[in-house]
Amino acid sequence: MGYTQAEEKLNGLMQTIQKAIIPIAGYGTRLFPATKAVPKALFPIIAQDGLAKPIIQLIIEEALTAGVEEVCLVAQSHQVEPITAYFSGDVPDAIREKSELAVQADRLAEIGERLQFAIQAEPQGFGHAIYCAKDFAAGKPVMILLGDHLYISETDVSCAKQLADVYTQVGKSVTSLDVCDESELSVNGIVQGSPTPDNPDLFKLACIAEKPTVDYAREHMRVEGIWDAQETHKYLCHFGIDLLTPLLFDILDHNYRNKILTHGEIQLRDAMAEMIRQEGMYGYRVAGKRYDTGNPQELLKTAYAFGLHGPYQDTLI
Image (cartoon, rainbow, N blue to C red; front, side, top):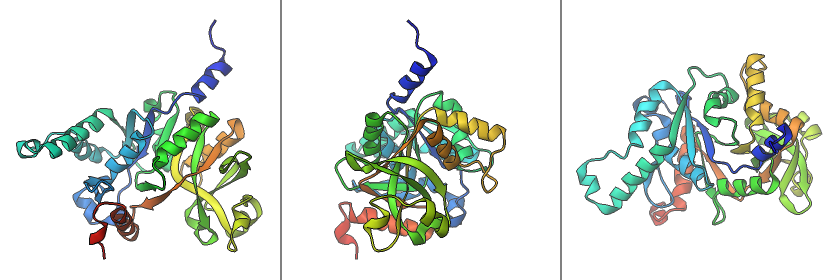
């Protein structure tokens, strides 16, 4: 007996996440002039294992810990060649002669075999960047990771894997969550929802607001156990990793064709808000920390944080 449309949709929801999309197509203006020499995605960080790795490698490796098999980088055309070359595993013989370095070169080639690219010719918003990878998604659920955020888990399970485990449990889209102060509303997407009975870190979401005003947040975005848990007002905000069902691309396609814009751009959070209305979504407060690499101050903080969690922490002043 063939599947009904509803059964096919449910089957899609329960699929494991095997595809990840990472948008990296920005111009890197806040890190100019260094970005004239090398794409921001290839800026190095001393990772927790003590190796110097580009930012994009750390993000991809985060996704791979969650069971992802294929990765699509949404990039500008000029970014493709240097990133492809980096993940080719093509290195001098002097590198290959050192076994520990040869292992790393093979690792790069292995990642390179998983990579695909989608070109975003001009910036039209975060949602548009993800929409550019529609053909890559091919009707499957996807993991979305920001191209300038890194993560350090507070447990033995990576942040991405924590979220993937929740997705398997609930069978619906799930977004990672953090807590932010009221003073940070202007730089965060905020969610509102209700904690689930069995897990205080898992929330059934009701709505999303991108960078809401203080008055709007106080009236509409309070969350039980978050707002009243502190003397200062706090909210649930996006952590930077999303696991979303194929409905996402139906909504992005509709928004693109009908020019449904916020601040002149196609927004991912607008599409996620519609997903909440149509099929529901959960949010999970991840046990970990997120780190930005998109501007000099945050890049410096990120490099320091990874240094403190690596083998060279004693060298830091």
